[in-house]
Amino acid sequence: MIDPGHGLVKLAKAVNWDRMDEVFGETFNPDQGRPGISTRLMVSLHYLKYTHNLSDDDVVSAWVENPYWQYLGGMKYFKHDLPIHPSSMTRWRKRVGEAGAEELLKETIEAGLRLKAVKAYQLKRVNIDTTVQEKDIRFPTDDRSYDRARQRLVKAAKQRKIKLRQNYNRLSKQMIAQQSRYAHAKQMKRARRCTKKLQTFLGRVIRDIERKCANPDNELQSLLTIATRIKTSSKRTKTRFTVFTNRRWSASAKAKRTSVMSLAVKSVWPPPAVVAGLSEPRLCMAIHTTGTR
Image 1 (tube, one colour):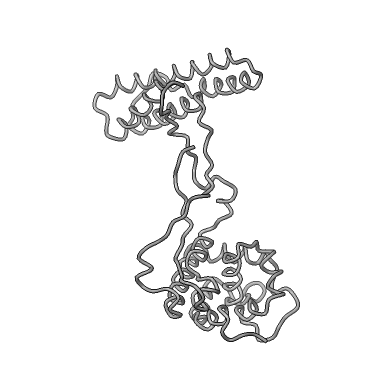
Image 2: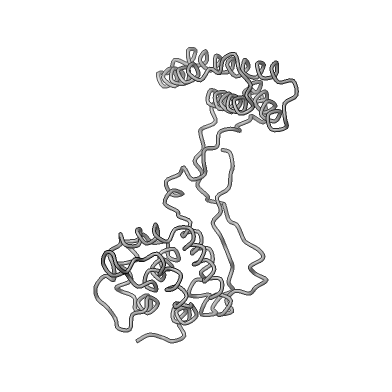
């Protein structure tokens, strides 16, 4: 019913499933709950999920229609019903955690080497493509740039036990809210006055730190330099500074859905065409980078 030369068939024979049972068997308790699901089935479903970029529901539904997927999962006969409930995949990922992702990564590399789909020297170099990497960035308006620079300076001063005359945390929060309302209502003169006050707050914090810290360290000096250039930049400046605007790289919805196992399995498991020897393999990893808008 299936072709022995198919990529998934070769992959199923190359993976050390006994070792997978030993590694992930520690996460199950045989005396509590219902009997555990086959480790081979769960590992294969996650491989197919990240290879074809499918959700848990989609990969389980497509598993019923594809005999090669069922063979990879360890089935001896073709099945017409769902192997598991999709929510079981989520619980399994939480149970194995980061340690399980590392074991999957190790086994996939060894399987690729055994199949000669990946050579040892090819693992020394990683191709990184961040062309369409999603990034959640604060929109670099003047008022928010002033406030963000002030926040970073206040935090740095607190870490170095520099007592500021005033940190303007409460006033800046109120001023940003007012500026947003005025800008939304097209009252631009009032909005500009609020932006000017935020710029003034930033200048006062800069001068206060410079007075009370005669010899700042390299990090604080760098923050002071950048904050000063943000304060003095204008629309006529050729290069306007939009630093301090980056949020955490995992803030986007897509990044939140991407787990450690996602990056590990997707980065190393060779696609079926590569396993079958139809194309030259490449090791590609999805790496989040830091940038500004």
